[in-house]
Image (cartoon, rainbow, N blue to C red; front, side, top):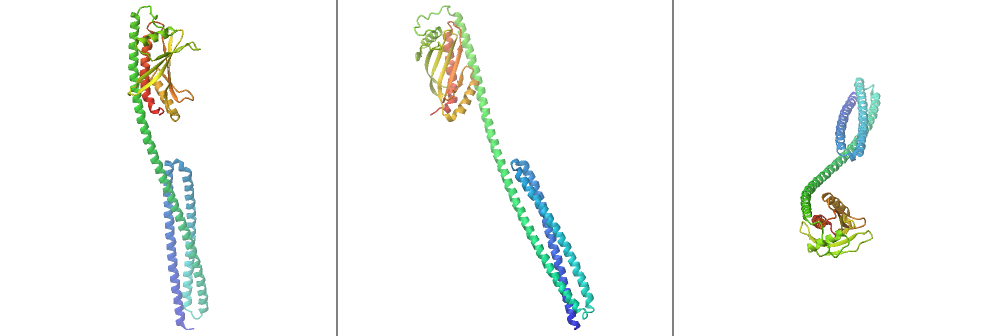
Length: 386
């Protein structure tokens, strides 16, 4: 064989070896880039894990889901670490192949000195180089498959990131809802403060009325001291009990004629029903029947105003709460709702002493109760059935 073709062939092999070496270096750099990308993903996943922990503190309701996501991220971390180890193993295998190629190149250079004698051996080495090329191509395909797998993991990480962002948005929505509730609570607090001020005003009014009652009581006591011991009820033709007669006498003195006298009932009580037209503190006209009950002992006057304000069933709970509030404001009257009724009723009991001052005391009590009902009517009017 001629020496010129052999040298050309050797040169060709040298070029092939250099190309393979360059390819090995490029592949190694690609693997290093992938490794850096994996490390970046790992750092990103660590940052996302910290963000998830922050979200865990802000949104307790999402704890279970975030813990699941954290576990998935950890699993992906482990998988990425496995892939990184596989890539490192492939690097080592490529470096081994590179070393093998270098050894083969040295062997080819040695054989170049005796090209003619080693032609058959070079052909064998050429076949070996082709086999190694096929093996390198297989390794390249494996690296490509690993790259695709890494890209899939990257897409999964992006999906998890989007899911975390959704959770963050949900947490923000919850924060907005909490702010709305806080604003509502502030509004309720302001309303309570207004009601407290109203209660204070009503308390002051009660104290004023109490002082008025005390003054009237003192006046009645004074009149009682000045009154003659004997009281002439001979002109009162209605009523059986003395307390009833004294009320009717006082109604006549006040020119109040809108009343009805009922016979003594089975409970031995005598009833006088007054038809009252009045005006509330808020200048609202209203009317009611005051049913007054007297007994044979002449020691008290019981008053009932039934169906004072009729309301809708939907407002029952609110009206009952309003009755409780009125009861806390007015110690002279009791506001209540009977089971099954849709109306507020009022009761009042006036203890009395059987003497000539009784008529004045009952009249003053009726005036006071009328004032209380005027205030209560303004409070209950918004719930009155139309």
